[in-house]
Length: 205
Image (cartoon, rainbow, N blue to C red; front, top):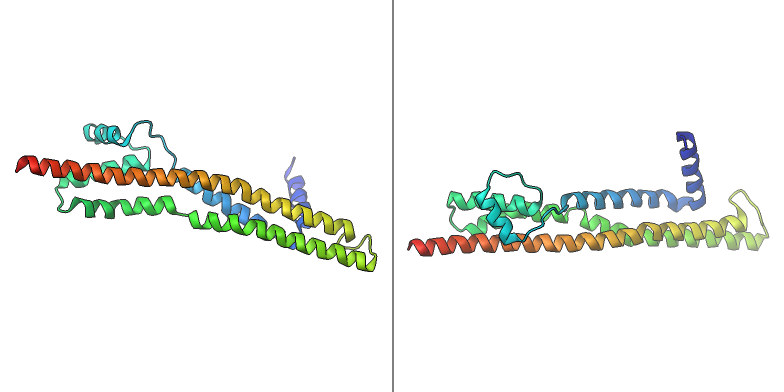
């Protein structure tokens, strides 16, 4: 298909969906932008546990990091080497940016998932109103499509709303599980580093 055919197809979709199609298309773009960003941020190449990962970066501190947990460990090790007082408070402040990063666009994705079926339902109502208007006036065909056009719009917008919401809901659920796992990893990193520091201090005393 060439560009002109794609443009024609898009025009046909907008005509078939009626007035709710522009916001539904916008919802689709926002949804997958947010999902794509979150997936990229939370891509996980960690194949070993947090304890082993911490030990690995303590022995190879200059090694390149590939995920949030590894970056957090390197930053935590650097703070620990500086000998800062109240390490836990410094780790909370340092890891706050990671926690915000993995939450970014979460609310946007959730709102789009909630709104999309409602927009589809609105299109359904508009299509049914057009259908009943055509029945009332006995207009089988009109500029807006008449009975057939109203039913088509009602079904198409419902389908479009669900097509946006269902895959988005599945992706959002998967990403929330990954977010929860990363938050647990960050908490464990804090505990391990603080425990090592406390143990080292007690040993010196």
